[in-house]
Image 1: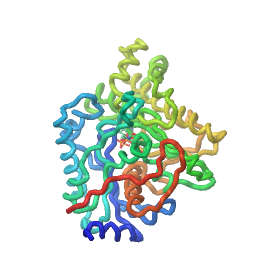
Image 2 (image 1 turned 60 degrees about the vertical axis):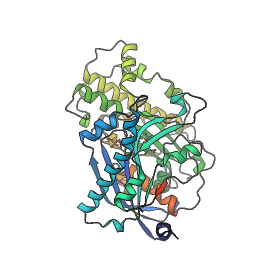
Image 3 (image 1 turned 45 degrees about the horizontal axis):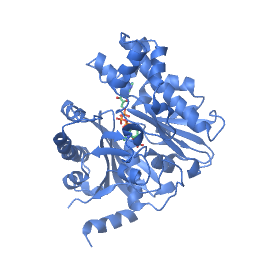
Image 4 (image 1 turned 135 degrees about the vertical axis):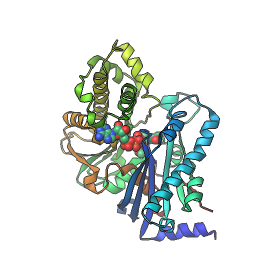
Length: 402
Ligand SMILES: Nc1ncnc2c1ncn2[C@@H]1O[C@H](COP(=O)(O)OP(=O)(O)OP(=O)(O)O)[C@@H](O)[C@H]1O
Ligand SMILES: CC(=O)N[C@H]1[C@@H]2OC[C@@H](O2)[C@@H](O)[C@@H]1O[C@H](C)C(=O)O
């Protein structure tokens, strides 16, 4: 038997697996690395985050990724080179992460690598009938496996599409296994570049479980902060937006898009929520001369209202009142006090952070990929039923180190 297959067989039978989960999201801020100790699988999974760090991307890395990120037309050779380069960079970051902590790579059972999303094009976006939902995450898993010497699972989203999904959100699997609680209606709201939420019903009936993207989270706020204030990469603590006033007409135009009329569940990316999207709404509302604080206030309100409306709409289909709901925040947007304040005004739920459930909101997405890898190697069949957007499949391609 190939020694790596034997190793996988042993790993699958361990009581506790050391799995490194990686996430680099649409904010292009860096690579989240979560070293997780995972016991059990499925609903019996338990996770302890042993170590977590976000390794910031250098300006050089950001510049190279932005050349292709969310763009329809690119230099194809650049994309191909980037695929290898990001794999190598992520491997180097993991090696440094382990070295800094004196953790031998032999102690790590698996790496679960999300990769860098460069384009997310569900059918709704590309509108080309003969083509399926499409998404691309780069940073090849073979490079990570060879350079770290650790068996690596990567490219999780393709199987989701192959099995009928849009390739996202995949957070629902980990959310259900780790955070589902009988007797409590929970909403796990992640506000990264794009916002998404999982609804975990008090019944824990997998058929009633629901997940969707809602639209922009931080992506437009970040984009226009950088545009008006090149020295800043985001509107820290909403300092700028707080000084502004929401422009209602502009807000109405921002919300007037087919994406918001599309039925749930749905996914989207910065391909739609781009500078052009905002510029078109500015033109339609004749507010091109808007002051930067007013624009940032309006963009923050845009995120808050579209998140709240999606939750109202999607959840009210299955339950009557949101009042007995607990909402658990994660992702960088949970640190934006204005966004959170407005959400609290718009949603009569009980607000918490996933940190209260033992998983830091900054680490949650990286942990969720470790959970997906754990399921692929050690999980047993679990059926989410016929609910749209949650195919009952394992995900991730396996790269062996030698
Ligand atoms: N103190 C803060 N005040 C306001 N915004 C903040 C603060 N801290 C973080 N953020 C926001 O969070 C963003 C980073 O979020 P996160 O790391 O969750 O993104 P991501 O992983 O790229 O997202 P995803 O992949 O889910 O789209 C920052 O760009 C910023 O907009
Ligand atoms: C294609 C892609 O990378 N989508 C991300 C992005 O960031 C947030 C939102 O959009 C979500 O749908 C998804 O990531 C999380 C981890 C998910 O799939 O659940």
